[in-house]
Image 1 (cartoon, rainbow, N blue to C red):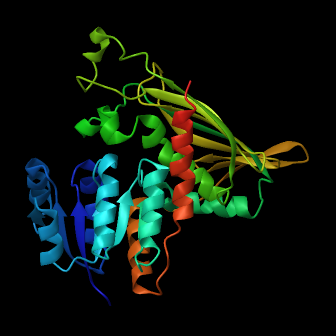
Image 2 (image 1 turned 45 degrees about the vertical axis):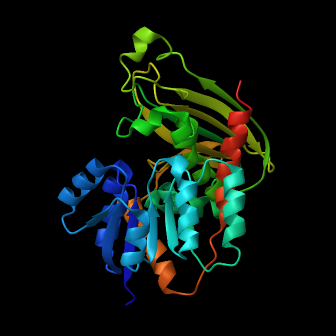
Length: 334
C-alpha cells in the first residue's frame, strides 16, 4: 500500500474539525504536518493531535518532509496563493471551499495545471453525504421525473461564523453566506443535474440587523462588511429554476437548512431523505434509507484512493460552475 505524507495549510476550525481527523483515520496516510502563520492555531492543534509536527514556514514544511498531499484550509483569499505553491512543488491538493474567489484565478490555475499530473480538488463535502449519492441516483433514474424547480433554504437566527476573524471581512472571506453557504449548495445542485449552463440570474444581498452602531455590538465582530442574507434565483438552460435564501442573521423562530427538489413525478427533501412520489394523482410518501458515515471521511478516502490508481485529471469545469455562478450573482446584486 502506497503511503502519503500530508501537509495541512491553515489549521483553524475547518482543518481541526474535518480535514485532520479524516487524514488521521485513513490508513494510507503516513505522517501529517501542519503549517499556520498564527502560532496559537498550531499550539491548539499540536495539543489536540499530539503527533503533528508544526511549521510557521511553508517552504520549510514542504522541502523537509517529502509532502505528497497539500490540504488547503486557509481563509478563501489565500487559497489561490497556496494552490500555486502546490502546483510549483507538484503536490496533489484538496482545497477547502470556496476553491478560489474569482473566475480569473480559476482560469490561471487551469492554465498552470495543463502540463502537470496533479490531482487538484475542491472539498465540496456535501456531495459525499450518503444521502446525496442516493438522491443523485434517484434523479438520474428519473424516479421523480424531470426536475424543474429547486428551493434552497438556509436560515440562521444569529449564525455568523465566529470561529475565525476572517469571516467578517470581504477581502479575506470573499463575502457572506452567498459564497460561504452557496458554494456548497450550488455545487450540490450542479452535481445532481450534471452541471448545466446558466441562462439567467439575479441576487439580492441584505444587511439590516447589524447595520447600526448599536446593533453591531451584539455581533461577534466589531466590523462586519458582508451581507447577512442573500436571496435570489438562477435559471438553467434546461428550464429548471433554482431559488435560494441563505442567511447568517435572520429574525426567525426556527433555523432551517434544506433543499427541496421538485420533479414532474414527485419531490425530494435533502438532507432528510423525504420523498414524495405521485401515482394516479395521489401522493406516496417514501423515506430514503442511507448510512450515517461522515461526508468528510468519505471524501478524504476517495481522494486518496484516486491517487493510488490511474492518474485522473481534476475536472475544473465542475468547480467553474460554482465559482463563476457566485461571481455573477454578486455582480448582479440589487
